[in-house]
Length: 96
Image (cartoon, rainbow, N blue to C red; front, side, top):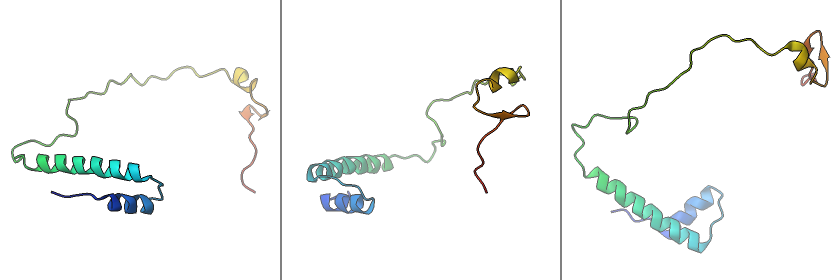
């Protein structure tokens, strides 16, 4: 069984540039210990004949039909823009 120490949690937090308190380090060490114990328990199971899955429940995407639709009226759109030219929205240049 692996043991995660408070010092290890503090070292990882330091490497990740995270500030944590002593109490948080202790809490995270306990939580990580519980996670590792659960994973070790799961590793004891025989999964030789279990088919791999990507999701526990079968899912089906429901997609709408891709149909062309009428767009917005150009004059109505251009009425709401600060500047336009030749039927297009004019934006400030970002390159010299």
